[in-house]
Amino acid sequence: MITGHYKTAYAADESIWNNWAKKSGLVIALIGLFAFPLFANNYLLLIAGQILIYMIAVTGVNVLVGYTGLMSLGHGAFFAVGAYTAVIAHNAVENLFPLITLALSAGVAALFGLLFGLPSLRVKGLYLAVATLSANFIILFLIRQDWAAPWTGGRQGIETPNAVIFGWELASNTAKYYLIAPVFVVFVLFAQNLFRTRFGRALIAIRDNDHSAEILGISLYAYKLKSFAISAAYCGAAGALWSYFFPAILPEDFSLNMSITLVVCLIAGGMGRTLGPLFGTLLILLIPEILKIISGVFTGGDGNALIHFSSIRDIVFGLLIILFLIFEPMGLVSIWDRFWRFVARWPFSK
Image (tube, rainbow, N blue to C red; front, side):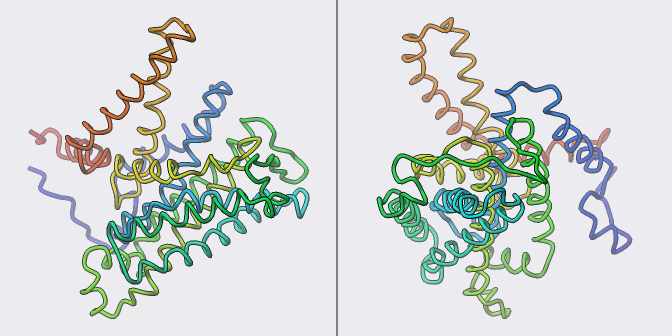
């Protein structure tokens, strides 16, 4: 009977894709990711682009919440900082290279993350979650002000530019998708490798027991603030991609609802795992679209019936999330793990 997979070399121990299932799964996922636009229409590309952007942001939230153990309900504000920074940068410098914009948006969002991460030095848990709510209220309040309107558009929002790469304007959904997909892969791989380093292990130690981590010589102040900065940088980069993907942005796009959605995606997928944000985002963002299609089938496209059915759809969505968290509190990634453990031990799985 198979009792485990034992490593006999350092290279095997350091390998991320250390079995045939992971290697083949990675290849299939990459092929599917980049071949998707060849078979998808504009609607599917719109949904897919939005999902990939959210996955980047939720991966950033996972750095803070899943790996460092610090709760935050303010990451929608960092998302907004990245989006508006990208627009302001393009208005200042025409046809700015997208990678420069991404780096700039991530850097500015990281600075805001450092600022609003200061309460983590004194409080944690629900107290920290409430403290980080200030990021949403303060940043969106500043964006809406009349004096900021020349840069942010104020309450009316602002039109966003199209990315331009070597003179090629990315105007179609397909072109925008191919800008988002490689950035998504790089950010996810960076997160996967981050927690195989000394820095990543220090964050995990803080999550598991911050007092013990401090005794071991880990600076709680430094590592918590760095975790906030990295997490906010992810959301800032996602915000920059959001500004490229949609023709205009409004302050309401980055309300408290977005911050809550990011956390819900992480919880549904599984905290403290690289695949958790990916699975959770797919679940949370696809279910409403599926329910919308089902409601359209049942109502025959009738406008009045759709209005009444929409409230039922929201109730069904809420119930599905509640039931999922009750019966699978560790998230979708735990189902994924159980499946591959079954495969690895077959035919002795039973």
